[in-house]
Image 1 (cartoon, helix red, strand yellow):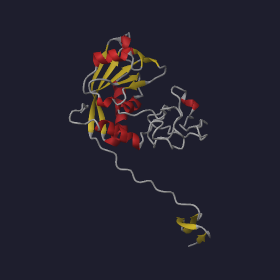
Image 2 (cartoon, rainbow, N blue to C red):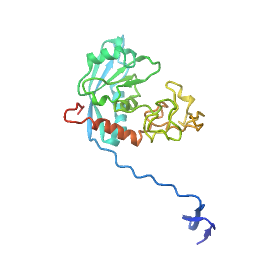
Image 3 (cartoon, helix red, strand yellow):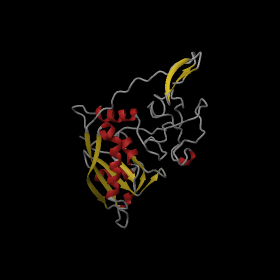
Image 4 (cartoon, rainbow, N blue to C red):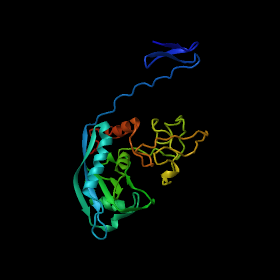
Length: 275
């Protein structure tokens, strides 16, 4: 066996193809401090019922299939499994008022009227519409923390769907990763007071409704040269569900914890909750 030693350096033992290599750190360098292990995420062990409301167009067409919506809910279940939460569609309802197939605005008059007419208590109400006028380009919206409002509120998705993961995050209390549009520093030093308030979601300079291609390439790699107030380059998590990059892969640990607490903290004897 060959032994190679690098003198005057603190050794770290590594085995490579039968040779013992003493690789090293300079005496002046310190080993990185390991983070304290995180506690396990809460397991809510809950299944929530969804009522899907599909608004028909002026020709009486739904323009989205029940099967496609079932598939979207299955995708949401995969994300929420981390906190032992799942969703099932208990009913599809069709709304014949085609004027609501195009809503005036996020949380606007049309939304309020539709909720008043069709909301089902103690269910998660998800409405599918063809278009939302203001703001332009929005793919859906949800009442923030609406999981704790069983008698009102809900989620709205623009057909044919695709935003339910993101909007369910809002419904469980999550803000966007880009809150403040660049007020969170790239090094995360103000992560508790700026941005989304979570320190395991890096600062995100995205400006709502900018083309994602201004920020990422086709492989979801961040390519923007935007810098923060200190002149440091941003490197956001483009795969976070609560971003606007369209590369949804995951929620973060702190996001999961916040969603679980959003629900659990309302489970007082006199509190209203879905289940």
